[in-house]
Image (cartoon, rainbow, N blue to C red):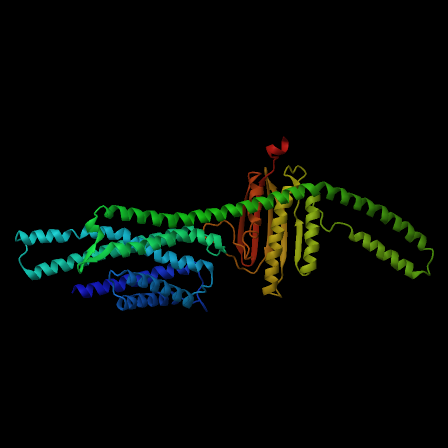
Length: 488
């Protein structure tokens, strides 16, 4: 009976570990081929079969060579399954394989001490036999089988719960699962898992020994290990869990620094060129006014010469050229006008059929928000909108693309809204406020919305975004008041 129950436990535990494998790996890696809801089941069954087959091929014993062989073969199985079912040609795969093995081994040794304490029940049954409370051999065998089965069941349940919670904690902490890990970063997150796995391998070698042909467990010789080993395992597990949390915090800090550097550069650049742009375009308007008057006089003089058609044509073209010096968009804000016209000419070069409509982008006369802050918000918003339209153009040649800008005041609050068409694909990550960038270099790209938010927060405002069909809407709210640092 015990052998049957033990086999059932082994099958159930192997299947659950297969579930943990597809849960852990599947959170980081994409399945090969087309999406299929059954692929997770295939991973579970494949792992369970290979684990049971390995247990039959290399039954547990206390020889160090056999222990190392068993661990290495488990690692090989994990690698094979990773490449067979997932697109695993990534640096993160190394971390997944080592960490999966390490967490399972660590949880096993944490719980095994409880199992060893539970074996004291056998001493209770021995005492019952000595005192005549148990006289029937069959009864004794049944009690021993039930005791062994219960202890193994309790241990496997505890290991399973502890493993599941550990993997769940890792996945919660490692929010940016598509982050491209560099070699030094891989070593940083891999070191705790590798150290924990090697520690477990060492324990398997020294904890179970054979003296005079009799198996002996080191716990019996040194009972204090029942407390020391779980403490060491807890520290190993905590180093894995908090190592990932620290790594994620480092990613966020790096992105925050990049975002701040870009924002500061945008502010400095905008402040530096604001006066220069205003001066240049004032000169252009003045020159245009003078030139148009001059051309008008020349055209009147040339009108007397009715036979010189070439001269009339040339002067008409010159007059049209002067008209093109006029700003296409006029919102009443020099910085915004300059920015809109620059972006418009950029759009016309790459996507002539994109419709840009800033007609409802109006600014009140009592606007106290700095022009360069408005420029940063609109500049980042337009860059994102243009990029989204370019991506849409690549996929949908015939689709009509647009960018609409508007603004309005309500009480002391000033609102800016930017709407743009896009391909409808939005990548949302757990714990992230804004959609993820599709660019490969996430350290440089994907910080535009963050910079918009930072600028809005300077004016006690905020940012919101919505998606409807294939329209992305960005709303920015700012309080129409001067900042204290601007007044100093």
